[in-house]
Length: 455
Image (tube, rainbow, N blue to C red; front, side, top):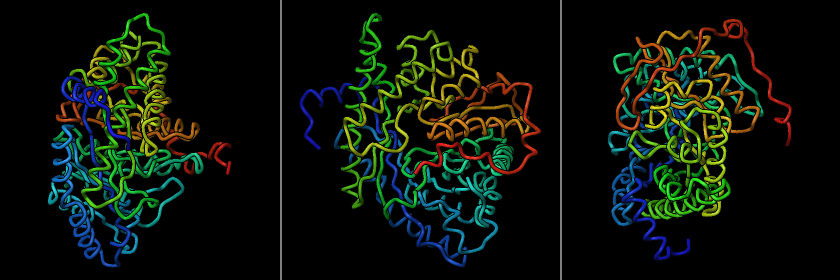
């Protein structure tokens, strides 16, 4: 990387001190394929030993880099090979011991989360996939740091509706098992269409099979920085100017992220993977994607024009990141996790932002329906329908989409649940009066769109 200029250094100081710029996560990917063993107990021992061996200095190293460069690194995380791939050799029907081994390793090395309790089932189930599905509710109940993800659809394969229906039941079971914590287990569970192998953000992070033995990737946030830059514009500046300001700001954020990521990887003795330049909000005042959309020109997030403003924002962030680095990856763009964004929480509270509008917004943003609270008594077919609609957006548009939906036991539309920390405040959305019981009864897959057969 070219050295930072004096002006860039001063810009970074301002962004960190006044605009809540941070590295949202450094995520160490660890390949666990060589931990597979016919004996499940041996598999678990190998997983624990390998994770601890490679990640023992992750937190210490990230903290030292943060101190040296003066840029906060908020979270330190681990992503591992999908557990269903590692567990297959054992033939085990209960994979909770693997989740417990992952959790114990995460606690030993001091990271915030370990992700990769995962499976790819967009074309069907292996025996290990079945075992993982059955174990998710218990695994996310009895562990503190484990996150799970499932691939249910892709542009090439279509949507596995059998798996989608089954996943909807898993979400409900997970929420009910953690009812005393507001359905917290479901906050650590996500499904995907077209998942990426190098996503550093939980709950969907996992170590793709195309990745090296270990790899360090970073996720850079910065809604407050973009908000600050746009607030200095005149209301009369045109949209091209708005886009250019966002691009220039994303460029600066990405440069800083890659610098920190490469140095952290060097000190850990591993390779640098990617910098994900997704704007990831927090519940903190001023650190909101919703605020950015309103500065672009909508009265409140959810009003007419919101999807167009989000499209501009997402595209400009991606372009700015690509100008700054050849290692931009992950999901990169703008996240809209409803409970984690103070502006979006307010928009839901004022009935401006509905579930239907959120779905429309996901056609142009980084991921999908993220951290959306739903009534605890939602039917399994309605939940499946919400998930399938989001997967269809990803499948048809050849983009990554996801669902992290939290049915909150005992709560109905408009009621509030507090999860605390980065998970924030959930206001239960109304999914409407109607469901799709007939669709739920049908088995099979929704075929891939014609464009999925291009080679």
